[in-house]
Length: 374
Image (spheres, rainbow, N blue to C red):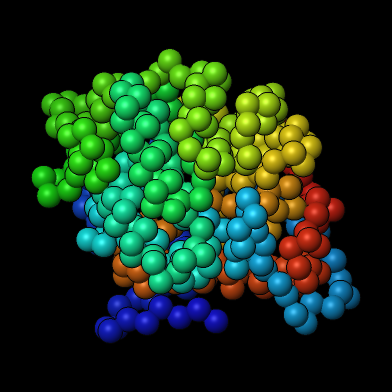
């Protein structure tokens, strides 16, 4: 079983909810609000979690589950369990090692990591730190900036540094209104910077009176005119496969496949963009059916237990992305904390599979679920 080894007698988390509670002791209120907040009334933020609670399990019995196999692959790359760490900005707000600690924890556990465009550690720093894990799965998450030369430079850096895919976020033509950040006038401390953007073009998060600096950055720098046709240009920049993150509709999923996407991430941006949008889990089955096996589908949003992963896989996801709980682990204990969060989910999925009559991931199917009536 998982153990978080501490040098003192502080509370020892045994699940992801306890990590969230403990992380509040390590983070400033402004940082905690930035990490945990959603858009407007945070309806979608809450519904991402509630969606998993609405789905019930129908376990099989008298199945030989004496040995369980949690391994899988995504875009042809092996994973020790069906898990990737979602792209999350500004991880050095949680711990000085930031994205480097997260990447090392992911690589050592054999799970994937998606590095954010808005990282506080550079593409190269993260890649170099993981040299001891040459087969580790790392994707680079991309926002298309108005400055196309900057976007091109980011793609070229990611490809040169050995990242395995581009993960294009498509649900943020403008930034959602996160009122906690606006009230806090969120910006980065003076000692932290956008590690990739500041070195390429001198871009950084501005300090804005009465507004979130991140909101201002998006308005000034990101391109709200991006359309499907821009995917052709993006794919011309490198041979990296394209993953589209932020799809909630079956027709958009079909179009993504037509425009060359190799995988789709069903996501509402953790409830941080359009408040009132459908929960990611509620959108999953439609999208899986729409793509009809042509591409792999990953679910993002609301994962807190191994049973949540089981439910997502039963609805057709190949893997899941885990976001905020990684930040809680990072805040509490750096790389060790992130590793522990991953291992807790691994242990829980292992037990959930055994209790559901599933010896391997391929045994997980929709018959395990009872879905809520709409």
